[in-house]
Image (cartoon, rainbow, N blue to C red; front, top):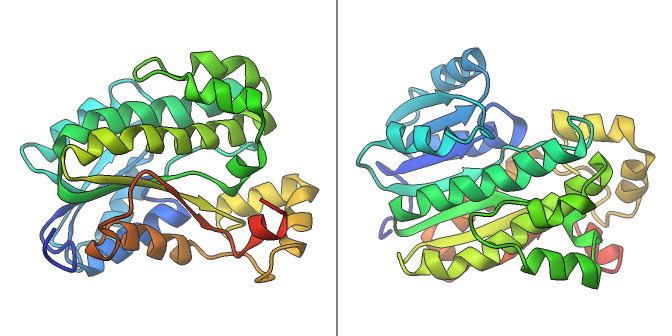
Length: 269
């Protein structure tokens, strides 16, 4: 994209009523983008769209289960003949929200289907940003990495399902698989002069983050070891995502950006 903004270009945001998704949508709206906001709840999407309609060039919504096999087709139908200037995929499930198989299905399988579907519609200079997690960097083993590298396009997560029997195991595994997906998709995206990257947030002060803090004492332990000594904010993740989608990041692709207040570095990763 030649412009410094997304003015007039289409930006697709999934999980658009959540903490990170709504923050991303707000920043894109302030750039005058056309917005397609995707999430599960129709009423909440309508409220989000109403709040942004005077800031964005155009706001549309798509209420559907993002893990449904027909979700990517619905996205393509909603955008019509337009090309996508930016995709920020924030939707996902944390360990307190579902069992292991469901987490793997939503966080990886649905993400892979969406990326495959939208890639042919990405504009030159565009970027897709997938939200991973700092926890993805904590599950490092030769067995896991070999299994992730063996994942094949279009085959989903079947090859790693045996490693995701609990929510606590499935979540970081699914997010590490997302990082691997980004690396695998860099070449195909590059053929369209488009980019793809992931963001690994640390401890972020959203509803999901607070639920995880209440459920796991490890969250407070990790917070205590975070060099910036605080939770991150949703707008800090949104700012990183918008940067990745901008011409200022035009040579960044196929990699993961850690936005974690230095936590992983302090833990030795």
